[in-house]
Image (cartoon, rainbow, N blue to C red):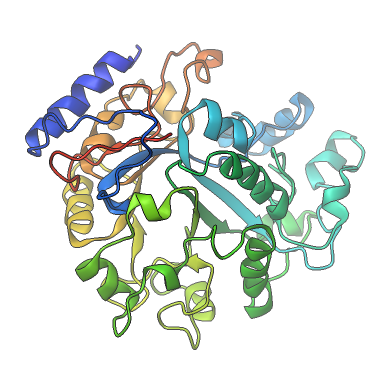
Length: 382
């Protein structure tokens, strides 16, 4: 079964009409992004585990031998710049592990078991945060280090100063204790020093002018949460060409969030948004990963309140195996600003004998949000 552009377009048209936005079509022009439309009034597609590449066939045999569910790890993405340029992706996801001294992840356990040599990429030997899905087991990536990934995004953003801002979610990973017990590496903890290094590495690549930070959103005399719910987000004109970061898993009740916002209740001076508990000072961005059933109402409640919300249109391979393709239309109609997929371009699922693809209608990277969009507005990229 295939979800075609025409089917998705039909679903989206219905959702727009139901929201009273019929006629406010998203268009591409050389006029730049609409000056009056705000960041929370658009919708874009994102890629899940944007950095991910499969390991070798020999390593796959070991993966599935230890866990049959490892087949869900067998997918690969294009380099980040190519996703932004050719696949209409505007939201990315990176999984981070600390490596303050460098060289900690050069010889993944699965490679040792497979009889393969250590990795020789010099980027792995440098001190600094690394990017991978599962330490020692699912390590392959289009960019080994956080800085390398950021540079791919910056190169593209510098060449597209009028594009919608690129939103990057960061998931902070640790080693699996069961893998460590088998001889794997124990990653350092995400303590205050390593969390501070995230800000430092971001700012080593992006200038303050290129970064859309909590300080850029918060209004004088208001908390960050009050700012987004009463004054709103920056306009696309002011946010064009910038990059916004938020933590996927530094959410309510987590020690990661507590450490990162210690002494900075509104994320003062921070480079990354947290997922603060609704109503608390640092709340501005959140996730409702399943848009189905009660998820739709929850997403619409949050986006109408002023929050930015990410949802997911599919799961890595279970979507393909189960031929469960209705979630795409539900996610698009939900009003979540960021709809994340593992299959952002036609052909990625063909290796599984499927034509599945999740994309915005009209072959466009950004459209007016079907729930929060401003009636009569137009959104465009140059």
